[in-house]
Length: 373
Image 1 (tube, helix red, strand yellow):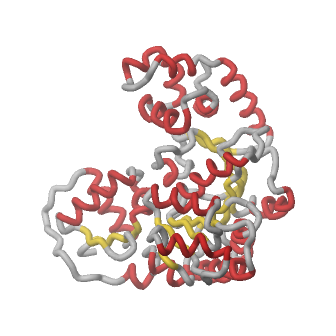
Image 2 (image 1 turned 90 degrees about the vertical axis):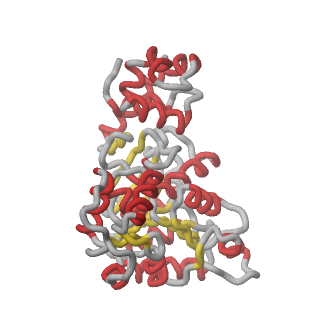
Image 3 (image 1 turned 30 degrees about the horizontal axis):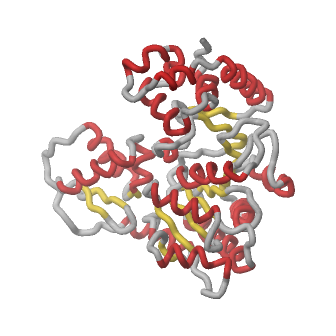
């Protein structure tokens, strides 16, 4: 049995009937993909809800042969293969129930920096949408020069978001709906190459995978899951960007939409998101930064509130959160999740307990302030 965690993780994705959620649960339950395979006969005793069908699916020599072939491609082309166990794996995405067991990356960036956004929208972008991408990222680069911009390299808003990020020296990553043996659409190849110096190309798909329609839906969960906030620039009343927005809401991430005229087909989706309270209306980078709590002036303020109770007994996890806030100042909950490496559902509970103990104060936009700091 091959014990290479990368090969085992790839092989696990190739076992029929297990799926993203099943694979992640098996890895979390056993501690690694390698352990899942090496102890597969014991799984029913060690983990609940593991059926004989799962054991049969794991007995799959062909999956290992394919995984080994994929790793040869990865090594030959100097790609990075990230498993759920790797520190460089996108921490925000790792917290999602359906996070992929393995990712392939070519480029140069840090997925776990303090600020990550994604910008998505229609393939039929208007001048209004294109100009918003250019203006928004120009202004955001001045306010938050370390932000990572994620999109999907598609026609329309996606490619304009990538190009605007590059023009303003922002790191930008394209999440692909196919393997790294090709670029789709091919006309965006130059932009994709330019991104490798400050950003790059990311995918869960193996080589020889075609950019089929269902793959785009699958990749949208990665776009939403690895980001602090989703920004829908333009969208018709149906489309992939609305799926990304729904996923962001499901993952408890911030979601924003750029409003448009009610007569414009390319703004119908955004207007519906705002109407249905699925997304907050956004008009500028300044507005966005304030909404997500990245505003430096707001973070430096010392709001009055609950008095901090001295000599409290805090758990190790609570102490960790306090140390992070003391060191970095006011932070958004998504940033705390990344910094503390604590799941978002557990972090929500910890923050509530700390607020009740008078240690922290909740501010606008999901930002938390350490009292007495």
